[in-house]
Image (cartoon, rainbow, N blue to C red; front, side, top):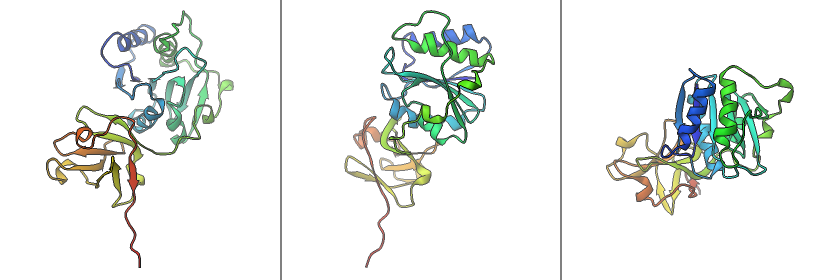
Length: 249
C-alpha cells in the first residue's frame, strides 16, 4: 500500500491531486493517509514523528513523504529502502531517523519523471509518479544504491526534546522515545514539571502528566483536558528531560 505522510492537510486540492496520480499510475494499490498534518515546514520535527509511526506499517509499504520547504531549490531527492519499506521524497532529513534506526537501509536516486515538473509541487509531479512505479513492482538499479548516510543528519540527536506534534485533543508529543527514560523522570515544559503516568485515568481530571503513547513517544497530556493549553506549549517548543534525583550524603 501507499502511506501518505505530508504537511499538505486534507483541505484544498493538494492531497487529492497526489492521490489521483497514485491511482492513475498504480491502479488498485490502496492509499492510506498516515498523516496529512505533519509539522508544517519542519522536516526535522517530522522526521522524529515519522520514525515513530513507521514500525506500525506492514512490510512492503511505500511511504510518500513530503514536508518540503525547499521545494524547487537545489535540495536533493531520495528513495530510501529501510527494513522492507520504501520512502520517497525530499532529501532534507525527513527520512533521517528512519534510516538511522533501521537494521538495513539503502538510498537511491528518485526515478526520473516522464512529464513536466512544477517548481512548487514535486509531491504530485515527481514523488508520486516515482512511488507509483515502486507500487507497480519496479525497483531501482542496485548499482545506484548508497548507504543511509546519504539521507542521515549526523548532527541531529537520537531523540529530540521538542514538541513535534499536537493532536486534536491537545496532547503534545515529544520527539523522545519513552523507553529510554528512567522511572521517575519528569518532563518540564515552560517551567512546569509533569510526572509520568501509565494512562489518563491514573491521574485526577485536569491534571497534567506524561506517558508513553501508542507509538512509543513521550507525550504530555491532561486527563480530560488539553495539555497544549494547560502547559502553554506549541509545536516546536523545547522541553527539558529531568532524570530522577539521586540520593546524596
